[in-house]
Length: 315
Image (cartoon, rainbow, N blue to C red):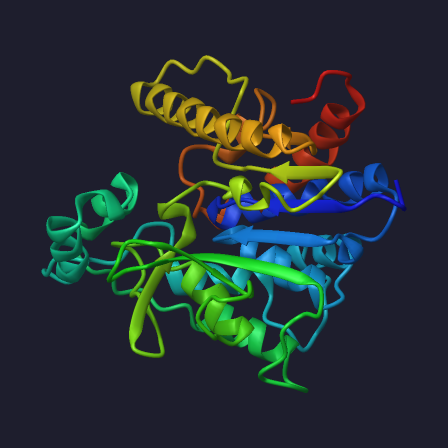
């Protein structure tokens, strides 16, 4: 494996999605056969952008697990502090439309705006601010505030004016510091205020895609590993209607990930997609921003993700 070109894709999924991914990183690293920081490309969307940045800045899977459990670096904000910014439920939004400019763009050029991005333009503007996340990131890059990893590290956001996916860190994309890019990628419409970079506003990359795996099409990668906390190929059978609806949404996201996977595989890469399964879903619940269950989610993932990787026929 060490001689192959490898990509790592870390999808969106809120506070609990991040914990789930972190719980599985050690198993993915063992499967790849070299440190995750050595991956040729890492793509991070929303919660995945936080994990991607931490990996590229030198944090090991074990250190990220320790941080989740409250035993991490003393100079960094604790994982429990992220809940203070967002809460388990969003604060009341501002009573104004999310992005009138995106609606105008769609009216003038209907095919230029993805439908999911367009839907986010109707959501009222959020109020929550990512103060803890920004402090976490700025502390990690304190030696060089403009530091960006040398290896390809792509942080996915959405231009809230044009409705287009933006890949910070990729050649030709708008310039941004790593903290700004990650905060933008995590700014959920209707929950968080959009992040202003330059003269534009940006929101959560998950608005466009749960993982943005398709960005790796044609990159000449031999292996791609995907952790997609918002999708599920196999689900449990809950009785509550709200939980059943959430499971159907997960399956819809899984269809999207599969379509993106085929694009990458047609170009010759082998893609392994890992999603939460029936054993993960009760721990995750339906509110991925409820940090009270972080430890249960992480501990469950430390069992389920290695088991998934050990099975033949992993998607």
